[in-house]
Length: 402
Figure 1 (cartoon, rainbow, N blue to C red):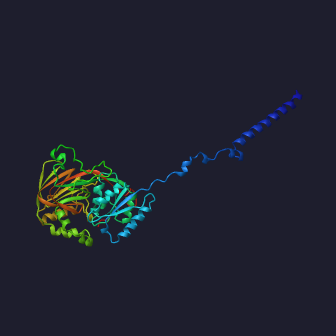
Figure 2: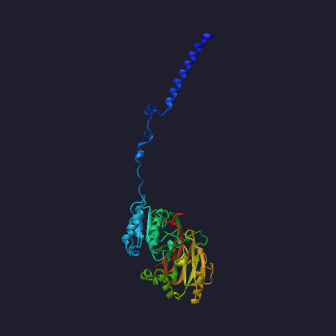
Figure 3: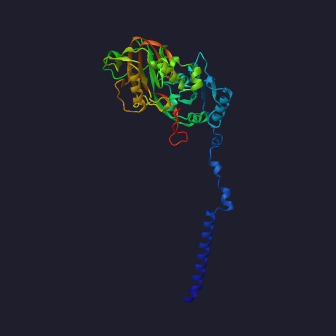
């Protein structure tokens, strides 16, 4: 038995050697040695070749509609806007089109839409903004707004910055907000009168002829106009008509105050208001104002309930007889003493037909557009896309009232 021990020990030694060899071979195959790495393909061989040649996405296009009459140095404004756009690498050099006396922005905006741009930016006063919005209403192209006029009422109601560079930044990087657009028809024909005028049970106004599903919009009739802030007839239109551009340039919105004092006691007129197809409501008024939003310059709020995206128009019929009546109305508005006043009736509606005993001047967003004895107003809910400051951005701050 003792003679077998050397044999057993030899067998055990051989088994140990074999186990060691097997372990070494296995561990070598697992280690990232020279021979293993040379037999394994590199990571780059698993990447498709086309990934190295991914095309750069095309830059976005912006068209700028610029009112040159608002600036002393138009070339400096062009340079500032171009630099602000190009500083954002995803935007191509802007196409800048200037407005003219004959075309305040309609044709320039149509040309921009024909170019299939991603953004149309209006730089000017309320008239320029309105002309651009008139064409963009019902399309999917957003409007950037750079206020540069006397009132800048839409910019103030949207709390946009009045600084040109900051406003361009908001136009390029802000969020899209869908806002309402008011639509006015002077002396509407029977074809332009909506069904709900004839049928008070009708659910809402007929869409104006601007084609909400048409990517490039369409032209309404010559007697139809878009407005974004307020439209009116009577005293307020007379004030706009009597205020010269020179006076506005010299003393700003204070020019309207001087003109208002001269026209305050003009003749009143008989009117009938037919709201949402209902029965006519008679007034003897100084002025009728229809608003899409309610803030005026100087921090004055004429229509405290008005919201720019609530799908509703706010109407004010102002009816004082003399100075005492006007004083009461003024104190009521300035002191913000609620909604009701004996000489100031308020209504809210989707459409209103105003009939007059004699033609009156009519204004929209500060521009007088003519006279009419019948004026129809209606709202197109959320039919215009406007760039506004993103929540939490440095531009998301109220503008300072002038």
